[in-house]
Length: 172
Image 1 (cartoon, rainbow, N blue to C red):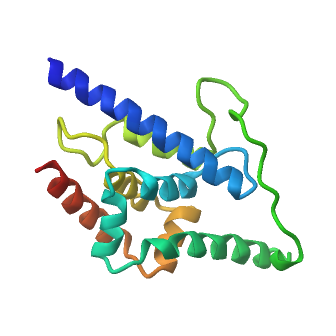
Image 2 (tube, one colour):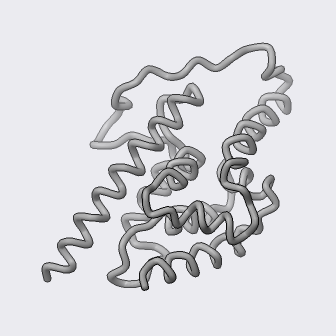
């Protein structure tokens, strides 16, 4: 019983850290609500290091992720005829995003948090790790985050497999 409560407490702390990191990354990109791509960046910042090691297992330098994400934004703007170099995004104001409920994220960000809350891709009793966040995002069919992984040359199925291996290794 106590072990289960401790795990839930640790998971809540991890989700809090993850959400705060995602909000910080969203504001840096001029967005008020974090999306899956911001949770992807925040997973790399988690102290367990499993998301970072998962990318390294796949020979994908984690430090290239932010650059690949920025390129996705630029490509999307260019696709609709906007020159991204002509203006600079101002960071969004700090503070808790508005909206209903305790936490407000974009649709893709909400999908990430909900999948993590359902313990998707986790062995029973295992703590929430950055690798789990990466696996959830790699399971998404569409969106900036999964396009960013693909732009780095990552196969989403390979990311999920490497994340599972990294999570299992961290649990031992």
